[in-house]
Each structure stands twice: as structure tokens, then as C-alpha cells.
Length: 471
Image 1 (tube, one colour):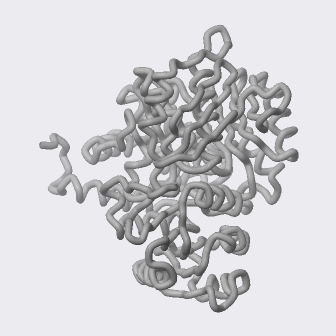
Image 2 (cartoon, rainbow, N blue to C red):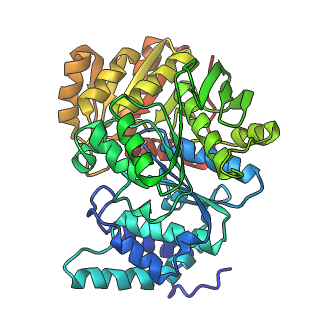
Image 3 (cartoon, rainbow, N blue to C red):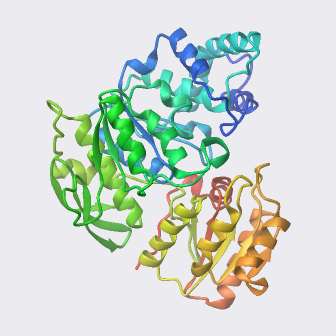
């Protein structure tokens, strides 16, 4: 029984009302280039972000999976963890986790009641000077940082929302930073080239910090090298397999049922035949980044410290990444994947071909208007026998008629169906898949996180853990 004064509201009603208030603010993709409001709120709260150690992550793809792996490894070492990721699939509370579990309803309401006066104070100051209220993402960032201090956690693993230099999370001083592969996404906010985007994202590298860097394009490397030198930070670079002088690399990978066996070489050790319960080469590389980040967190005298094989095996064994090649239904198998840019789609398609034995695969695709729809559809085309285009409930979703026209240009008219609702799109895809191949049929729902979120709710995957069927 809660001891909170909710003014006659039930706990569920109070949570809904709080979320409605937060979501009424500017969305996370609509922000001003400043972190002053977040810093002001943290100062008024007593700088909660300084009461625990931080691993800070940025990049274009792979951030959330890498963050989840890092958190699981740190927790396996007996340390209390906080995890802040975005976006959420079902409940906003998923974004703020303590010891691997989303913050509970009562704790979320209590947190809001404690922090809301500060939020409103910062809002008032900003409005007086002609600025906006704190945005949706700024508020959630402050709530997460305060929750971690209140728990209290030993280590917080914090994923940026977008970019780096002006991201609300950049009020933290990560002693370890992780930069996953950088590609084109969010160009209207971060810049039109990977060089511009890398400059934005490199801002999470703090003075003297250890930085783990994924394989990057040639254009990105000088930008990150310059940022490291400017801040006196230590860079630990991933290299292609067999590259001379490599600091960390994926030495071997064997796809298997439910995931893959990987052998990873880090600055401190080589870890052989570790099971990672996620599909695709990209997840092996994410595991390498996470493992190296944890070694650096444990660094003694600046030198990375190897983890025990038992800790590594257990830490990875407990990892899940909802919405990343996740099976949400069987017969036929329905997979969902939150990839929403061409780079992410390419990695997902490679994982599909490697780990799943489909004879016919039909796609359900919905894309948001700020994404590269043509690039996404082109990357999906070789993998799909047919595509059903639709639109998620997001106001940013590309209208079905427009997406249908783009899909026909890529797939041809005979391979495209359009339907206005997600449930109808899934039904149409299932019928098409089973008509073409009853036994080897599958459906892939992909293109936007909001589409994946609705599909998980429709299939009940938000209340259970799906199981995949791999080769």
C-alpha cells in the first residue's frame, strides 16, 4: 500500500497523468542547443550525477544493446547499477532501470513528486528569459540522474538521446565513454556528413577519460583522434580482424541456436567461446565494446583489468535486447527489429540471413518522416519476398500512400501491399507469408521504433519474452 498523497488518484492514474504532462513538452527530437536547463536542475538537486561512476555511450547504431550488455556485466561484478536508455517500447519507466529492472510505478511517482518542484522552477526561469520549458528528454534525464543517486547506484550506464555536445545527458562526466559506429542519422539536427555527426558525438569524451571506439569509417577517425588529443583522453580502438596493432577485436564468431559463440580480444585478455544470446555480427562487436568498457571501469593504475571467465559468461547470459531481432510470435514466426536507418538495416539483414532459415519472408514496414525511407527500403529489398507498408500512430509517420509510392519504386508494384493500420498490416503479411510458403514462412516488422512498440503490444511481447527459431 503506497504512502504517497496522490490527491485521490490511483497509482496507475497518477503515473498516466505524470507521463501525459512530461510528453506534452517538446519531444526529444526537438531541442535547443544547450544543456543549461539540465545543468541548472541538477545543481538545484545537489548534483546527483556526481554521486556515482558513469559509463557514457554515443554513436549511431548499437548504443542500447551495448549499454544493456555493459550494465549486465557490471551488475555481475556485484556492483549496483543504473541504466538510462532511449527510446522506450511500452512504458517510459523502461528508460530508467535499477539493477536491471525498470523503475517501479510507485518509485516513479515518488521520484516525480520529489523532482517536479525543481523542474517547474527551472521552467519558470527559462520562460522568464524567453526560453522554453524543459523538454521531454531533459526532464527524463534529470529524473534518471536523481533516481540513480537516490537508489543509490555504484555505476550508471547512460546512453545519449541524440548526438553528444548538446545532449541532455552530457551533464555527466563519464570516466569511460563508448562510441559505437557512426553513420548518417538525425541529419537535420546533427549535420549532413559523418564528419559533422562525429564532431557532435565526440563531445561526450571528457578530460582524461578512457574511450572505447568501435570500427569507424575513414572520415570519422581523424575527428575522434582530434577529440582524444584535445582532452588528453585515452582511446581504445576496435580493429578489423587480424589488423596489425589492434587493441580490441572480434577474433571468432560461431552462430548458434539462440545467439552466437564469440571469442573476443580486449586490451586486458582474450575471452574464448563466450555465449552471447543475441543475433548478428553487430552484436558480437557490441559485446566487445561493452566488455572493454567494463575492463576500463575496473582499471588499476590506468591499465584495464581482465574479468573472470565466469563473470563474463554470466553477464552476457543474462542480456536481452527487446526489439532487436526479437521473436514476438510463432507459426509463422514474427520478428521485430527497431533498425531505422540504412546502416542498421544492413546489419539486421546480415543477421537474418545468418541465423534464420526462412524460405519466404514478408516485411511490415513503417518509417518516420525524418528518416531515409528510400535507403531503408533499398536495404530491405533483397531480404523480403513482399512488403506491406503501413504507418504507426506516431504523428511523424510517413503517410501510407507516400510510403507505398516509394516502396513500389524499389520493390515493384507486384511486391507491395499497403494498409492503413498496424494490426491489418500484420494480418496481411501473415496471410501472404503462409500463402507463399506455409512451413518456411516468416514476417519481419521493421522501420521505426514506434511500429515495433505497437507490434510488441499487439502480440503481447511486452508482457513476456519471445523465443526465436534459428538454424
